[in-house]
Length: 342
Image (cartoon, rainbow, N blue to C red; front, side, top):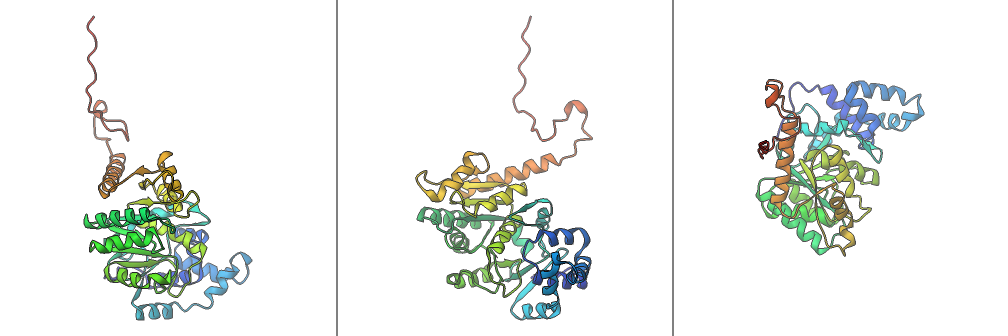
């Protein structure tokens, strides 16, 4: 397990614990301010403003009842740690959420994450892929999610999902079957199995991987917390694979978050007669997701995207003009045709 960097200010950590305990996950008003001003300044402002401004009244009242030192102590007693930006265990990839906008009024880099499990979040997230989909999955969907996740884990990738019924649980189980790690991102506290039927699966994930939540321990799931959770799943991963999703499925919001983060969105096509696959098939048809049917397809898409991103960032200023290729365009492998003789 990683230990925090020595240069992470204790005051900053305690301020983030207090904010995490009082705000709703993904409250863009607060996450945005913390990113600009720092947690200590934002906390001082909210504690003062809560007494005079109705806009911040609820948060101000909640802050007054939080003892951050006690919250941390109780979490540690239950094997839960709080990781913040600047810690060795904080994945740099999450910083992309600062500029990814908002969806359903949720957004921004989390002020911190509550974590349970022996794994290291930075290490496990380095090769992480989100595998998500419908709660009301068909047998086709659960089979595809299990096989895909098992193969991804065998190939050294961490599978990230949300522990929901259907595709999510199949994704976690597939990774565990391969002996690989998996990360469950929760819409509630990491100490609350949700759904309750997955309590045993949650313990297996904590043993072999990680359980992660933006909400503090003891927190119950709500619709807003589900929506906020989706951006964390997309933010932790290199790309997102959607396995089944109806046309109005909430799962599709993870695809929108991945797109906002400029990360690959992939979809496993389903039968045209299946309502559970209409949303995914639509993403593929509109070019909003690439079609994948195997783990190798996923890895190819991730590799291609990483190569394109590296190429776009390449500084060619030292290359003589005639040799330099247009930015973002690969040199053609086909030689130009010779001019016709006159």
